[in-house]
Image (cartoon, rainbow, N blue to C red; front, side, top):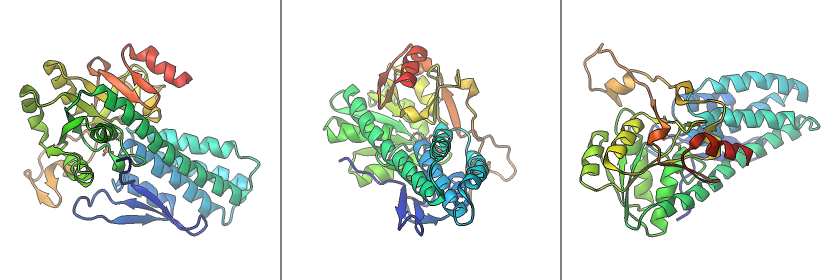
Length: 353
Ligand SMILES: CSC[C@@H](O)[C@@H](O)C(=O)COP(=O)(O)O
């Protein structure tokens, strides 16, 4: 199966339409499409986790820039639009700090504006929507390519563990790590997928389990603390995760708990694969120490929905991501090929390609 739910939809004509995002805060209980017609609404949607997952955040931000230009074009001339868009880039950039796709997509939209100096205001708006659409569809194509490359690495009858949600919901519509799992399933190679991230945000439980069940991929939900047990029992052949940022030396940031899984893989001799489109590689940052780690609210740890699960007033830490050092990464699967150590020179080749 090559289709999976895509988290963003454009509805209607360019001059009157609006963007819809599947509200991931409500899944799996409710499939509600959240409508937006301004960049500020898109920024709120990213900040509040209506949409999440590194590539999906980038796609949403690109549409946010196009929506802003559409509103500005009602009154402003082209040069004025270009100037006013600076505030829009800034606003969207401040929504979430860790996923580099956000900044990559904003830069790409900025470049598109700069390279379209001959266009008048309405033509510029159309060009920006076209670019946002290209970012969206390219991401999906890249996922399909990563899926095929990643599935080739797995043994027949593979039992795979994945963390957080990296599927259609988190991307342009197929998935990074979950795309590889989808491709392995389609090729008849996958026996089973262990799904985790059950705390603090439950993306495995709420989102990955939902996607797997929709596509009839055989899966078992486990809590994060069960991973070591199933590895020891010989029930895990590979761990595949996505990432919010790969840096030049091959360190990777992903949902909190990923680092622990990589350490467990090392102990048990299990390959630890990372799936990342090239848009998730930050070639400027030299090591994982330079990755900004988002600190999220205490309430997401002390509460599940509205239910308190901890004493009121308890001190809480909530880093949303952790960094896995390159020494624990077996390979990084990109749409351009499978990259292995030494990561610095091998990743640099992708920048040149
Ligand atoms: C789809 S790429 C992988 C990541 O974006 C994913 O694993 C992840 O950590 C998402 O975090 P989130 O906080 O849900 O945006």
